[in-house]
Amino acid sequence: MLRVYALVLLSLINGATCVAIAGGQDRQCEQPAEHFIDIENTRVRYVEAGAGPVVVLIHGNAGSVDDFDFESLGLLCRDHRVIAVDRPGHGKSARPSDADAHLQYQTRLLHETLLHLGVTHPVLVGHSWGGSLALAYAVEYPKELSAMVLLAPAAYSDGGPDQFMRAVLKTPIVGDVTLTMGRVIFGEHQLKKELQKAFYPSSVPEDYLQHASSSWLRHKQLRAILEDEYSLDKDLEKVSRHYSEISIPVVIVTGDHDRVVSAKQNAYRLKTSIAHSHLIELKNTGHQVPQTHPESIFNAVTLISNSSASNTLRGHGRCERIN
Image (cartoon, rainbow, N blue to C red; front, side):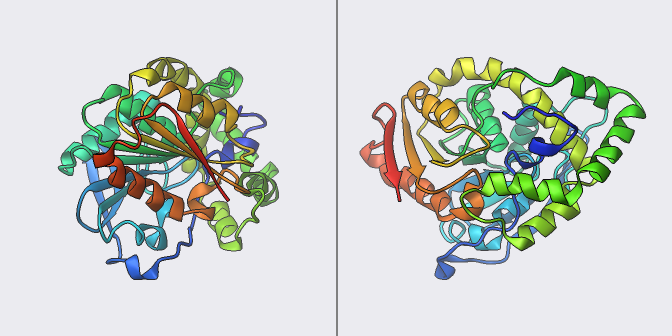
């Protein structure tokens, strides 16, 4: 993943998301309903729409269920029960103050949430940091998933967390002051610059930038973003040792111009580690796959559904490129 430096900068755009526009208007179902539940004394927000086999959507860092809005959900919810969850500290979900919300904790929290909702053997769809969470879930609960779709996944450590930033954020008062200074110093101008890198070669939608400016720079979410960022590398070092044990069908979708999470070091490397995997490279596409190519989620889920009987994902590391 990206190293955290100078408080915010690159860490703001790892998996960042907002409103996605998708085609297929005839596939839309009812407006997704917003819900809140308490899991392990943590308030969790999720939205739900449709009926059928369950697809669970997990956003990146930063982000929220708004990553997968009504237009995107409309491609899936006609034939599926679609659930999108705010990770702890993001969107409207709370974050525990008495423990680190590390990858293992978030994996357990998601598992308990799905159990509470009566969900068994869903397809997990994870973008960026959400891809890390989906992979950890598959390793921890190998018999409780039917398949995974990983969008520009952060699958491997890129060198280690920023321990200095961790120490600063964990220091009472100093950490709060640091976050406040970060918002003042960098603000919207730097955020826009980093979003341009995340969306490259596409442009940043204006409403996307407005949403990010109004939500990601808030104290609670900025702290969650940075905490998730500096803890992930260490967690991925442990989880990645078990990728070869994953036996469910996996579709990996990556952009050929991703400047945030290296496709070579993550998506392509992951393809060689998971036997029942299929890699799709999207041409002229960057990191923000849920926004620039929301149809790729529907296509990947459909590929899994259509291949369940024919075993077309049973080859080792299949790959295709889509213009």
